[in-house]
Structure formats: structure tokens, C-alpha cells
Image: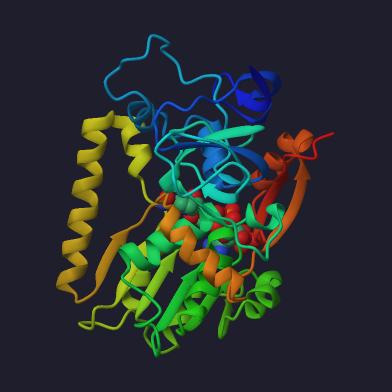
Length: 359
Ligand SMILES: NC(=O)c1ccc[n+]([C@@H]2O[C@H](COP(=O)([O-])OP(=O)(O)OC[C@H]3O[C@@H](n4cnc5c(N)ncnc54)[C@H](OP(=O)(O)O)[C@@H]3O)[C@@H](O)[C@H]2O)c1
């Protein structure tokens, strides 16, 4: 059986995106898997990077670690990580979900993506969609929500019972991750300072940020230095920021800097899996020690697929504490246009794809 999908057959710029009606229908290979009919999907910077071949070395190893597959290639490859949709079929070990359930998930990047009529996911990656959201709204949250959850909670140790009175700085507050992070940290009761462009400040304040700083209005480092020190920094921007940002943390009090912009996959693309991992390990290890000696924690964080974490996010959504921030919705036929929009940068929340009502 075949289904409509957007695929790539090689890495490159936007023209490699190809629509087909003949993509192979997903198959349940493991008893814990479910097949979801995709109602809506959304785009993330990783889709742009993967389209261009970023991370291919590591992802191909993860796709086929023992080189079992006769077929040597990852193509045709479907991008798109977020899904909101309806369960169509369940593996024999799946007891939590049944066909017809409305669910959401973020699919790990080594699996086939969600820019497709159907997608297969492990049961433990899937969660019941928040009741108060449409599929379009729900598709805006899983990947950025789980990435933020990983950075703040799993790596950074923040949770709803230890945030009260803490000062949190979010660098890059206007995009997908930033708009989610501001709301999550506010829901947990911290004081939030958000850094974004001036035109996003109304949005970011509406999401709950206490202080908003425009990074284009003069030297950001100097502006931030005039504020009281922070307990936690989430860096969605990267680049040279980490050279000065850790000086904004309180010392010897468990204060932590977490960055989402790391050379982890690029190192493997450049050096191969083993040497790339070694290089990343040495880099993060030496920086961690250097900063620990100065009394602050330095960490890298990554997206982690997790149904149980999505359950917690769904609760925050249904209780009105977190809402999706949608920049623009595109129809399924407009996927290349949606990629171009994302590539233009300056996201104000998420770019969502309405998959089911395709024309
Ligand atoms: N490690 C992981 O597993 C992981 C997972 C998800 C995301 N990420 C990374 O995290 C970053 C954010 O992801 P996203 O999904 O939120 O991206 P996004 O939706 O494209 O948002 C990026 C935002 O950053 C703003 N920005 C750009 N330069 C800035 C600066 N110097 N200071 C403050 N804001 C700035 C942009 O707006 P303006 O340019 O208009 O200011 C835009 O709103 C990306 O680099 C992404 O690759 C990593």
C-alpha cells in the first residue's frame, strides 16, 4: 500500500523536497509500535538541517547500527518531527492506546517523519493529545516542548517545586523553544528574563516574561550585567554567547547554564562517529570542569522523545498554563513554502502544516 508524503531523495536546498503519492505505507516492526494518521505536523530547525544532510552520519548509524539492511540508503526520507493525529493501528503489546485515540508525539530524527499521511511511532513516544487543542494547535508543541523539558528538567534539574524565587534567563525567547520555555518556567513559578528582538517583546511579555531585553538595542552583555545575577540560563542562540553568559550566574549556589546549540552531530559528520563522539566528550568535559571550578554548572541538552513527559505537558496545556504559539499554518501542498519561511528565520512561534485537509 502507498500513501502521500513529502520526501527527499538526496540532501540539498529546498528543491530536493518531492511530493509523492507512492511512499511505502509504514509497517509495525515491533509489538510496542503504533501507526498514527497524521492530522497536523510542524517544522523545526532540525528539518532544515536534515534536508541539507546535517547529522546524517550519526542518524544513519542509529537507523542501522549493525548494517543489517540490504538497502544501503536512508532515502526516500520523510522529514517532520511533530505529529498530532489519530491512532490507526496498534502492535500486540500496546495496551495504553487503541485505534481512534487522539494522540500527539515527537518522532526521533532517525525515524521516518511526519510530513506524510501516516507515521509509525513507539508507544512510549506517544501521549494523549491535550483535549483543549485542535490538531493544528497540538502539532506546534511536542518537539519544542520535549526539547525544553529535557533542557530545563532532565538536564537542568528545574521542576514545579524548586523554581519559586529563582531568576531564569532565556536567550532566544521568540522562536518555538523560546515561547514554550518562557511559559513552562513561569508555570513553575520562576522570575523570567527573556531576550528577543524588539518586535517580539509584546508576544513574549504576554507569555509571562517579567523582563524583556531587546538584543539588537545595544550591547546585550552590558545590558544583562546591570541586572541581578541569575540561577539558570537557557541558551537557544549559541555562537559566542557562552563566552560571557556564564558570568551572569550566581556562583557556588548550583546555578546552571544549559545550551541547546551544540556541535554534537556536526562533530560526527566531520570526524566520523567514534572520533566525533570523542571530540564532543572532550569539549563538553573540559568546559564543564572549567566552569565548575568557577562555581557554576555548564551543560549540553538535546531533544528527548517521551510520551510520559508529553503527558505532563498535556496537563499544563489543559490547565491553561501553556498555550501553543503559531506563527503560520501551511497546507500539505505548501510544504516547500513552509520550509522557505522557516529558512528565512525570525520565527515567532511555530510553522505548522495542516496535513489532513490537503488539496
Ligand atoms: N539540541 C537539540 O536537541 C535542539 C532541539 C531543538 C532546537 N535546538 C536548537 O535551538 C535553537 C532554537 O530552536 P527553535 O525551534 O526555537 O528555533 P526557531 O523557532 O527558528 O527560533 C529561533 C529564534 O531565535 C531568535 N534569535 C535569533 N538570533 C537571536 C539572538 N542573537 N538573540 C535572541 N534571539 C535570537 C529568532 O528571532 P529573530 O532572529 O527575529 O530575533 C527566532 O525567533 C535552534 O538553534 C535549534 O537548532 C536544539
